[in-house]
Length: 197
DNA sequence: TGCAAACCATAAC
DNA sequence: GTTATGGTTTGCA
Image (tube, rainbow, N blue to C red; front, top):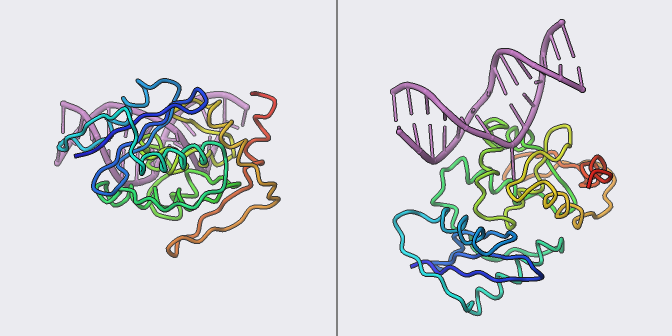
């Protein structure tokens, strides 16, 4: 049985699906309906679920954690995600994405080069990310450091990244499980949009 | 710049 | 099995 919760912080809705001591999905957005919709959509078809109006203590912790990420804070992740039900390649991409530190972005192609596959495949997985914003798909941009796309809209992507500015000056190589991933200061990507938004 | 073709894992048929 | 679908990338004019 999966428990589903929704909660509002500062005019923004967060959604949460928990079961088996694991997080099955998270989401956020402007309306409760959208948030619950995308969340339920991502659940495995063969499991039952129940929607609760009051969050459990564990759910409250998780909501606070989601809000912290949304606000651009540095957080330590210690909630288990149920990603083993996803295809192996998808898992690799999600893990690589989670390894992008706050303050940096990487590109679809850079992830593809690190874990195998192609940039479009990575883009597809970002588009279907069921763990936003825990899996920080907003930190993945195009190879020319234009923003690329975002499920919640480009403005939201810009704002999320904007709060993650840490003032890093140069690009870097991140190592994850023997993969090497090229990352760039988030400012590099924001620069091109500062006047736009 | 701008466009076409290559790219590649998934989900849906 | 096969096909359609992208939050892409690269090369070439």
